[in-house]
Image 1 (tube, rainbow, N blue to C red):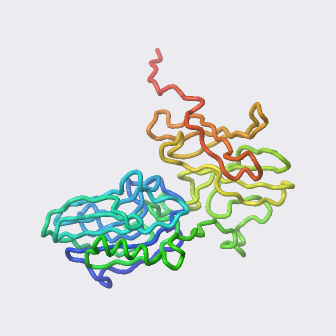
Image 2: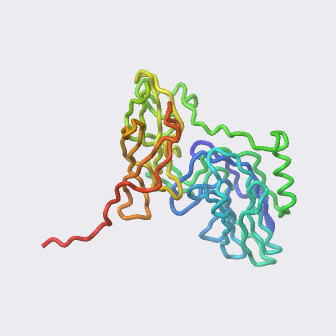
Image 3: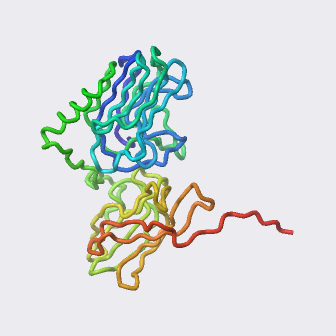
Length: 340
């Protein structure tokens, strides 16, 4: 995605005609906001504006879709809402197009989770765009520098075939992949790693920085049960301001810090689907820690209110947090005021 992706010129890759199957194991690490209304591409070779080519990708909060240009029109099939791609979990995804018989479908872990019809006897509209794995081939550019619409996580065993796989073939393939692991997918290693930047002269050695990418100001300093905690605004997608999470680190002496999992991330159905911004920490009446956050929700105007987060287990190192289901402070809607 941001730092690692693959490209192949269109002329060096077989162009499917009327059948296509894409299969891959994917393990998202984080979700994008969706700049330009575009997906984080797992694999794509397309031009939606021209109605050509195809893309398999992930939308906001783990939604995912297979889209293709078929006989001059653009068709999309989205996975069922209750079948998202979950962070930090391996998922076997398959996208299938059988234009001969008029079918597009998506499969998750061997199960059909979405389908739509296309004109029977039609053809896939070819494109001159390059094939790109891990990033959108027409990515949004942020701040004139950074390319978005990238898949952040792991991709393995990606296959692209110019034939339509059957449901039975897909189920069998899924089970065969899992046999060496006792029938269950292993836990993917999606942890951010500081070691990737060893020797980087531009990385501070004393001042705290996140394991990877961008941070804004720290928030919510807290001393609890013998440890110091610091939280900070963080974008795991790249070294720039955008879809904000809360990073977290702990220390015994305020000098040596140990990275923790993200404390909070924008979540579908939460009070903060579009960003977790400035905030603070305190202890409640029972002496347990709580976090106050500015909850971003672009469906509201104003789009920022105040939410609350609680630790799932109030024990060190306070690694797991959960946003309260309701806002605790709601701004009044914007109003025009006439001044005489």
